[in-house]
Length: 338
Image 1 (tube, rainbow, N blue to C red):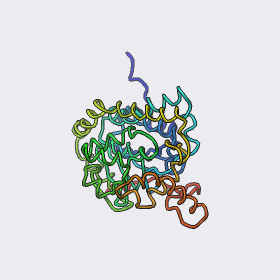
Image 2: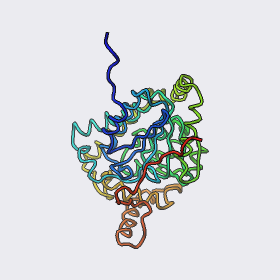
Image 3: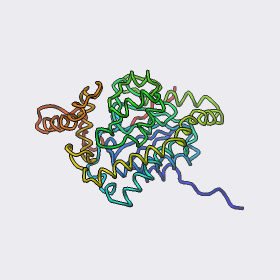
Image 4: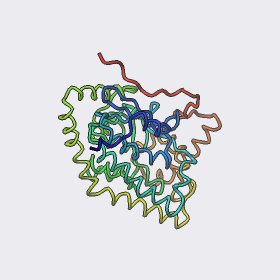
């Protein structure tokens, strides 16, 4: 009779995704640390696709009993690879695949292909926090701020982050943050029901491991069934609403491209290569934590550009500039069990 089908082992898929994630497993707890090569993760079409692909793979490995999603470095994702969106801009096939399949699979695979308990551990401010917020529990540090920046970048806020705001925080509050791009502080996110717990800087991963080890005290069967209960609300939301969100963003972005309005900070839709300097400014200042106005909406990309010029001139320091020394960033490893 036929044996079980051969499935990839951790050592195999860890090699497949070594440019995008560090995978560490201890006692059935898998920690996925997102990264780009040996640096903190840079947003790109390739990284965007890898998140959904890896979610599907780790969900098939029954040795992964609990999963923690976190980032390399002391923040969530802030930078963008300026050359990482070349295929994304190719019409029609590449753009279609990135926006139709990748946008959907990142959410779908996280929610439906992983059947065990999950924790998102956010070590600091950043964007594209979907894999952390789709987890059953989300831990963030006290310095964390989040936002849905798409509207100011010329996009419909429909890649899922705006939808998660509506889902977790309610329609009125969610609509406010997705449509005004205002940042939420860690305290606000906790008060709004967006995250589960706020911890001191540097403690997000440690706290995630404490909870994972606590869950390990439950029987494997019970905590896995519990995971299905925890995932059910998000799964129902995805079934009802998610595709409308992603298709709406795709349609809006294609209209702007067709109008020839994709480019720098003076264009109605800004190219992905400008994300890094805009994000660094957004997280290095408190401007976006205030209620936004028509003036601030227009000034935002220009203020970011001026700020970036001062950074390049050495007049001010960019707190989010990455250290490119090989081996400088080390993935978190838990303390030995007591």
